[in-house]
Length: 169
Image (tube, rainbow, N blue to C red):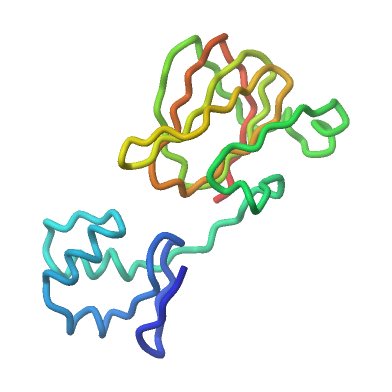
């Protein structure tokens, strides 16, 4: 999403509009506070700090090559074979282990995961508390957890998990 306010746009995360510092400096504090709140920035800080946060350049993040364009707000899960794991070097990715528990995470970037063992139910929860469709990931499954959700992901680990993962920055 972007909206150009001047000839010198500053690129921001996809959940923010493109804004120009000069234009922001001409806006009343209440308007800047409203923009800050809209983009998850602390609106109680100094005006100049809110403007800095709204104009912070970011490097565009890459998306997972396995993420379907029509499924940007829900995990994509599919079984894979050994050839897939070898081709994509999955066994060389970082690992994470967990006993059964419920944990809540925020994903700024897409995360590819492969469950070597275990089972979990992953549920998106919006900022206003609305629970999305739960997805089951079990041993042998490959999944992509999309980043940038305006909310959190609840991981309900049902059976101890050993997963391999990589994040797309």
